[in-house]
Length: 224
Ligand code: AMP
Image 1 (cartoon, rainbow, N blue to C red):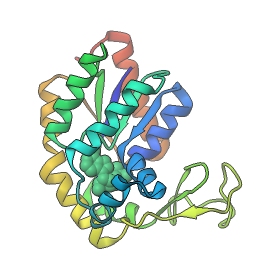
Image 2: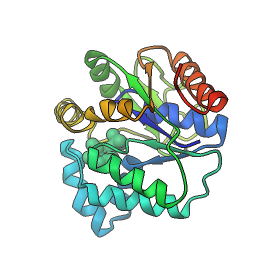
Image 3: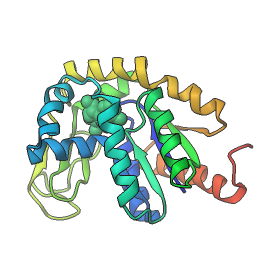
Image 4: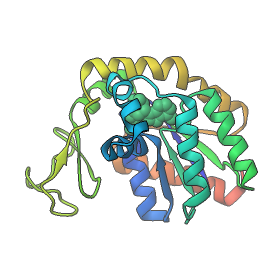
């Protein structure tokens, strides 16, 4: 089963994708993670995208489509791919459809994680991750049990994203509303859209996503 998690920055896409990886053996394809890895490696592409990412703007369609194509043609699909943070423009959505078709694969459903804007600001400004295992934490809603140590892997290497600040978030939200939110209508029209309440607890959102995926698995479609 191949799915897209769609939603604004801070909606919880990464957290829920990680849960699906653990629970369903799915493979998370996060273009944000791929771009951060490219920056870390110091590659030419990584250097090119650094300033754009820090400002909160979108990198070119060409770059992210190239990254996704590389992963789709090389990664083992396991229980299916989770597209996290991709597509973010209509051109990316069309490119994904063409790529999947070429590989003889389908897009099974698109899960929109709906969250209101005030909640996004609070979520993004408090979040950090374990630099070793990737577990996501939040200053208020999900602090580690021992503030200096990751609950999952015991590492003390916590990282905060350079673009998780108020100014960058404002730009990221604008980019989302201008360029990404039209995808909600696009996938609705394709009969693929399901919406979950992203403001629910993490477990509550996981349960809603599980129900959405079960529906596709049981009926082969999302028509109710
Ligand atoms: P994310 O981790 O998904 O929030 O992405 C972090 C940043 O990477 C974004 O603010 C963009 O600058 C860039 N980025 C990630 N995915 C895409 C995409 N599909 N299209 C364009 N830019 C992206």
